[in-house]
Length: 290
Image 1 (cartoon, helix red, strand yellow):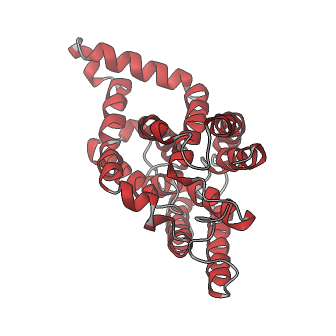
Image 2 (cartoon, one colour):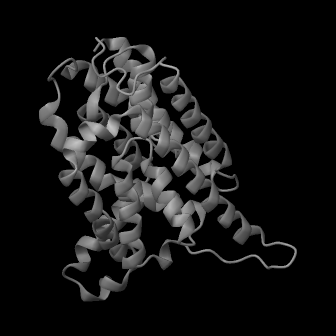
């Protein structure tokens, strides 16, 4: 991998990790369209450490408070009912599904799941799901001619059951094209949470899973066509760009619809199907490109 490729892929990772459009799919598609070799699951996992570092810094006050209260609650019974202590446990519980499935489906993640036809399918299907979830949230927030606005849940209402459901949604993102943030935010909206709460928990929930995955894949860095230098460079680029995207996205979702992302996902999926059908791209384009 050249330094230019690593710069572009790091930029793509930073731009797409927190938006509900799937960073893994865009890394895969960028390589396919450019005629580059697929960077692979290891490169994707390691560069995600950069974007998760951006999450840790952006939400540092929340994370510091949660870790401190959770740690002290292990020895202080009175703190076990504190919301921050409960959030610590809920993040742990919500991380179980992706941990189990990530290990179980490792070979599929690095192989069949990277088929461009599957990516096109997940882009469209999850785009429709996000669109439905967004419309339901908008209906609750604005009400209508014959119905009053409905109060949606916040993170103070988060239960173990909902935390596990969030975790299952996050695990779906093991398939490129689903999108970690898209799946968890959609799940949160369908469970009745506000856009801001769904996004905030989505970002917090991703930290253990992404960091664990990145560390696990470190042993694969430097093998094949992807060397350590470009991988680290791409990770740094992903961090810088990712931080800016988080700041923008958290402001955007406070009063805007997810429909632009829904439309983008569906159009990209259709275009990808058309390119494969026309023979412009093969289902495994980029996997053997030099």
